[in-house]
Length: 105
Image (tube, rainbow, N blue to C red; front, side, top):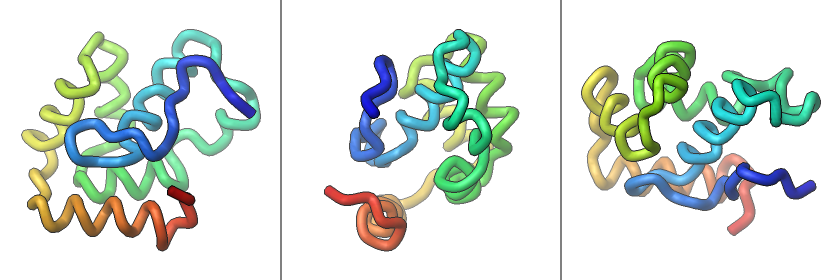
């Protein structure tokens, strides 16, 4: 199902796949545009893996995103408040998400 304003999990913000999709879901939920079957897993599954990788709290990130941060600003916030993964760690994250997590390229 194609959902308007919900980008592909393969799209990157900075060097990370999936991060932008997670932000889109946060914004769509706040706008009332996220389908019900997506709502039950907000902050879980891939979302949980992503914030765990960045070492930030999902709800804290959501508050930042809903305050108006752009995707790039939200990622920079994660790097400041959580951690800044190395280029190699981001490459491993992307490969894990594409291959290990079952996201087809």
